[in-house]
Picture 1 (cartoon, one colour):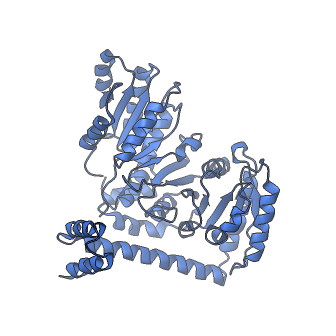
Picture 2 (cartoon, helix red, strand yellow):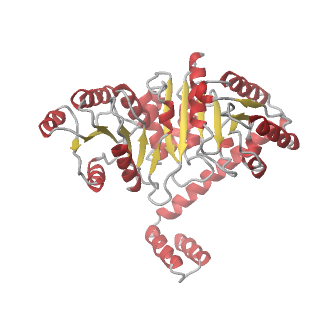
Picture 3 (tube, chains in turn purple, cyan):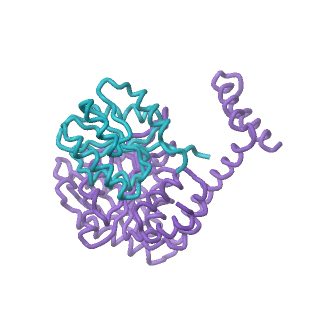
Length: 316
Length: 134
């Protein structure tokens, strides 16, 4: 597929082209940055919804039901489901589609699984680009499901317009333990599996916690109760998401500051990546890295000296 | 800078519920550094082809023990080709009578792996046969 051709077909929303484009940015193939430059002016139309929360909270089921809800309203939905890569082999088993099989053959739904490929923070390095591709391809809603997160996997705010944090009853005092990190990024909170015991207690604790937090934009994050497996509460969730999206679009000062901070974060990330790629593409840099890693592992050299040696080697 | 990852869809078409083999394969491919998309049980050929398209996989591994391979596997190949996935490998693993293997291969199945195949052989096959460029 030729580059110009690929861009045109992505903008026309062709599934094959969209899939290839995502692979291209994921593998940083030739022309990946050219593609993203061409796509950029066509982005900003989709509402990007991020779904994050602990493993087993029911994120995939919730994404499935939310997408069905949007689909019933005649919208085109892109879904990106992120799962972790193995830190040892670099491989991954991506199983989020299992809970989304009702959507799999629908022409208005596009599901893509991505592995984190060593990225921390709950997303993969190219998730933001994949979101942009789906946006440009004409999807009305893009739902991003992060890996099951603990406390500090807050990258979703970079990719999403609305961040939804999913909790389950019985987390009890655990909520206390996660007061920073993901509790700060929730624009909407969901208590899923709300047919279980302890839902009132979880809600009370969450309310107490949120009442202590003061967001700079003065938004008061709503708490929605759902039972995803029975499609309960999905309307309420959708309404809460829309409410925040409308609030955030109002262009008040704090929203602008937040957007600028996110843009800066993204630029620094790309810069870091580019500098590292340039540094390691130099003659023999790869072997030098291997050699120095061995020395550090065998305690012959400290990592700081190794990095200095890599940097001075690159300058020559 | 990043190397191209091999992506494989491991699929269970038809009605048999025995997915242990599929899970063993998925794990072996993961341990070999590949990204495996696993879609769960009882998938139709349409669901499998659609997932392969969206996930842009290099290969589709079909695990089948039900005896329906002569119907389901060629149907999956046809749907992939209709989607423009001309160079996507289609591998079949499971209980397939030896006399059916040639017929499957003429219908576009790249390789058939019978019980007893070592996972290393499958990993090697994929590494050697997946298209080089994206």
